[in-house]
Amino acid sequence: MDSTVSIGAILQRLKLAQPVLDAIRRHGRQAYPNECCGALIGQEDHVIEALSLPNTTAEGPRQRFLVSPEDYRIAEERAFAAEHELLGFYHSHPDHPARPSQNDLAHAWPFFVYVILAVREGDPADLTAWRLLDDRSAFGVVEVTCGASGRHRT
Image: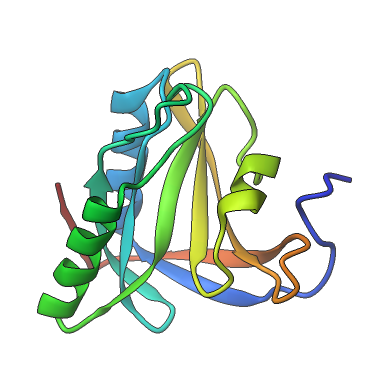
């Protein structure tokens, strides 16, 4: 068992509008072999917009991602302007499983949901969602469902 993941009840459910899922998968394909990242905007448990953001890490974008403070601010402002909330973030794991890494665990905040897309040899594969446990010891599973409405903005 991966030490970054907790076995247990589903922490919550997350609904991704189909255009949001399509946008995340497209972003993962375009960024490969690097990690892509972006913001999840919506209300409550319903993501209606995937806002792609630049991966600004200096540690090597093939194994890490970083959302800069400026890009975080842009995502917050975008959500506020649309009368929605910043629900969390997505990123890809090129040629690795869609499971949180130790680095993901070290940099996560407990009030956001994190969507991870596995990209295998350039092709989007599994997509999972996670939320940091309150004690910050591991991630809990978030169940993902897909719907028909929403939008994507780059």
